[in-house]
Image (cartoon, rainbow over all chains, first blue to last red; front, side, top):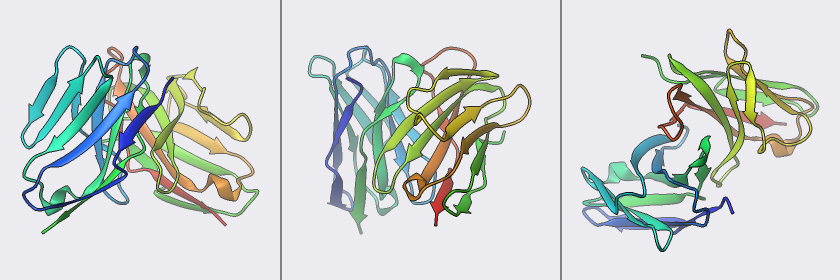
Amino acid sequence: QQQVKQSPQSLIVQKGGISIINCAYENTAFDYFPWYQQFPGKGPALLIAIRPDVSEKKEGRFTISFNKSAKQFSLHIMDSQPGDSATYFCAASGDSGSRLTFGEGTQLTVNP
Amino acid sequence: NAGVMQNPRHLVRRRGQEARLRCSPMKGHSHVYWYRQLPEEGLKFMVYLQKENIIDESGMPKERFSAEFPKEGPSILRIQQVVRGDSAAYFCASSPLWGARTEAFFGQGTRLTVV
């Protein structure tokens, strides 16, 4: 299966809170898991990515946690800010070159 | 270093017309991917091209849609005889020549509206 399942569909957090978005996949050939951030009217921009040889990757306020056995990965945004309000997509690739399979997206709203 | 350039940004076509979307990859990138994003949905893969070759078109509708990436010039996604259901944002992404599973850089997209 090529699907990547993402949840929740929408998320509202207060400024300074933690935003958590989850994704699950089925294809064990996937070996690259990026997260993309998309603002209205713009193209997706790479936020952070992880490969399955590590269980966690942190870049600033953004952390990916990866559970290979469960075939799940998640994005944590610490100290969420109103400027983080955007749509976030998880994705995966591996057995088809750099072709990406995207999750359905999570619309994040951070209230001031 | 310019990013991935797509034009036009917005395109309005009447039903039955042809839509032609252009994508110039980042300098040094020879892999191009086209994705379609329907309203309130995620991006769906359409086609993967290298210079003068279609590598994977498994996501392309069987009819009316075609893509090319000539030796010179931008990649073109062509939609013939457009229908209302073709209204969507079409994104192009490019990645560098060396290796798969590298970062794909996206353009700003072309928003196609069929009236």
